[in-house]
Amino acid sequence: AKPHIARGCWCDPWPMAEMYVCTKVQPVTGLQERLHIGDSGKNEVRHRTLNEIVEGIARLGEDVAEADIAFAVFQANREVDVLFGRVDEHSLSVFPWSDADLNADAADVLSGPPPFPLAAAPSSSRPPLGPLKPVREGDAEWEALGFDYLRHLEKVRSSQLVVAQAAQVAAQAIQAGEAEVEAAQAGEAVQAGEAEAEAETEGQAAEAAAAEEEE
Image 1 (cartoon, rainbow, N blue to C red):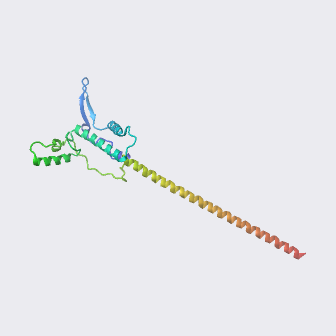
Image 2: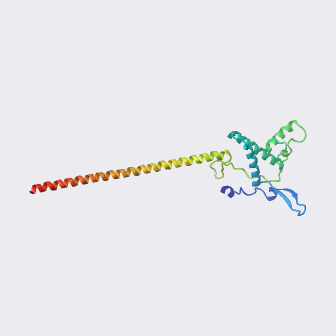
Image 3: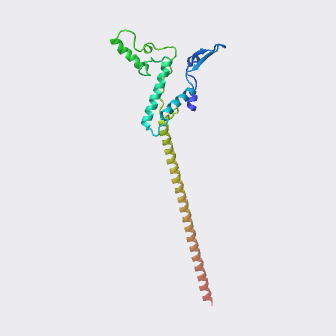
């Protein structure tokens, strides 16, 4: 999360007036109540809705679950866009340029107002965000989400298993090498002892032969 914090991703992208929606005024104190357009609480509510997709289901394939979650997120985003006036209520998608294309096609054959008024006159009260940077696996900002996280976790565990196996093989090789060196040293010691014993025996035999000649 540190790269995101450094880039300011945890800060509101617009001024306070753009991030809050006025709801009502308290009758006694006169305080203005406002609704923040985004916070962790809304995410938790959305997570609860997503969890209901698999509630009570014993088995659900990855492909079906991913499609169900995608449709649920799509519907949630569309409801929010309609609530804040970003798209028309009867819009066919969450992309305003699609509605604008349909308006252009309808203008060639129909007279009257465009089918999607909000796409025809988009609000300019909110400044546009800066250019979007695609984040790909390997980038500092990349995070595995959804089923990608499971695949990423399996890949990490596999890499850790390979490293552990390589370390075990290396340790076994080192132990085998040490055992081989010890065996070689032991063999050399035995040979040296045998040679020393032979030399001692030969010396004793030479001394005995010399004693006999003197007699």
